[in-house]
Amino acid sequence: MIKLSVMYPYSPEAHFDHAYYRDRHLPMLKERMGEHCRYYTIDQGISSVAPGSAPAFIAMCHVYSDSLESLMAGLAPHSAELAADIPNFTNITPVRQVSEVVVDRS
Amino acid sequence: MIKLSVMYPYSPEAHFDHAYYRDRHLPMLKERMGEHCRYYTIDQGISSVAPGSAPAFIAMCHVYSDSLESLMAGLAPHSAELAADIPNFTNITPVRQVSEVVVDRS
Image (cartoon, rainbow over all chains, first blue to last red; front, side):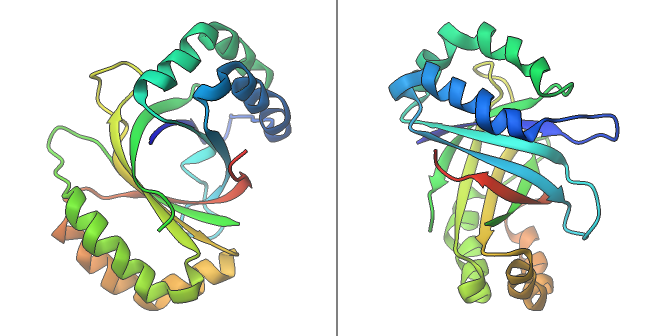
């Protein structure tokens, strides 16, 4: 299983509309990707390990696909549309990375 | 659901023993945390979104607990032992953060 993580770094100037991200952006991504998106998860950053500290990332999503080829096939035709939606919920440039899921829910 | 993400930044000088992490470190963490760890996942970084590029993080784990209190109760008694095991698999200082799971497998 392959996982695309999109991670939005925290900064004091950052804004992030978690409701839009949850209710509009990710459902749109899943609809566009179709069967190429097995499922996705969304995290809202709370803190570092010290209570009350700022988290490294204010929000993250993780998009799971069967393979790198499937992930790219699902995203490539819609990348411009998805990128154009980002200003609707944040002013942050996300960090993105592709990982292999080594252990899934042990 | 609460999630602790431990993320190991990539650098050219970094080394990371993925087998030790998978077979020894995380199983030890889960054993020590007991019921406070619902489950965990492990990712191995492949790349950024450009094929062949370096990933932001060479490895990540995500530890899921029912609540922040449960997470801390599970980790606090074992944090010194867990930290002492880190040099056995890497020379990287990880980024750690606590998140709320907003959407779990949509």
